[in-house]
Image (cartoon, rainbow, N blue to C red; front, side, top):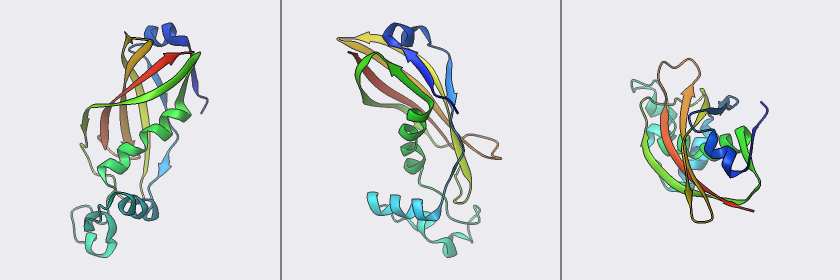
Amino acid sequence: MAATVINGLDELKGRVGQELGVSDWHEVTQEAVDAFADATGDHQWIHVDPERAKDTPFGGTIAHGLYTLSLGPQFSYAMFTVEGAGFGLNYGYGKVRFPAPLPVGSKVRMRATLTEAHDVPGGVQFSVTQTFEREGGDKPVCVAEALARVYGG
């Protein structure tokens, strides 16, 4: 996948409403979910105990919702860049929801759409709707409004 290149802050503002890209598929492994559990201290058994999780409606372990959300930066960096900006910062998130589980062993990708961009002192704040899709799934596993700021060079 070739990254979308956005040339400057004015072009960024002009792309509101456009899809910025779709990431490659990413396999969700138990090792990655376990590492996320270790990093966050969230060892809830539905995420880290495959044997016990077999008896749930999911048939196995599922990724933490926040694990899924944490893939956003990795996918975004591969999908698009803003050239001509001095630097950028994660500004936070608006609405985040997890409409469906993400089973360990499945594949996930992210679709990014630029939904808003407006001037802030020295730069532009923008919002990207991140829609995480599970391969073969009928609804998203996560939909998030990611907020970022980029400042002129």
